Image (tube, rainbow, N blue to C red):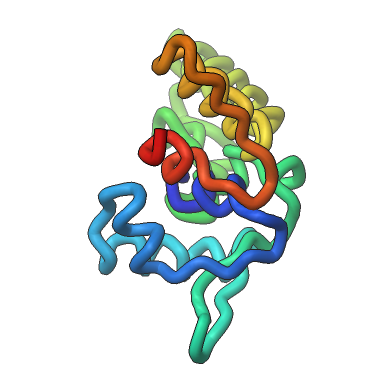
Length: 154
């Protein structure tokens, strides 16, 4: 999530090397590389090969939901095995189990929240939080700047 958030704070179409994302977010390169492979397969990021290569968002930040990101990396969100997509018929105890309904409702609410939360929305919250963290220093992020880089430079 942090890697895509860092990309979202950049100029649209700006290619960023994996090493730069790793340094900026303090994430091990091998770990982030595997995550970005999944994000590329899901169509959320594009990989650019060659000199000056790296990664770029495949869509605008407002067109990428938190749910899409999580499910691209982790698979479908399930609180309990009986709620997993492969168990469409449900749990054999679903008719008498008070937990099936509870887990199902919680899972649906989380999915709804994550589906309506976008990278653009997270970036706005990050910008607001960064501005509050440094009183008296206005931090306005616009396209083409990285929230992390701008914050560290101030």
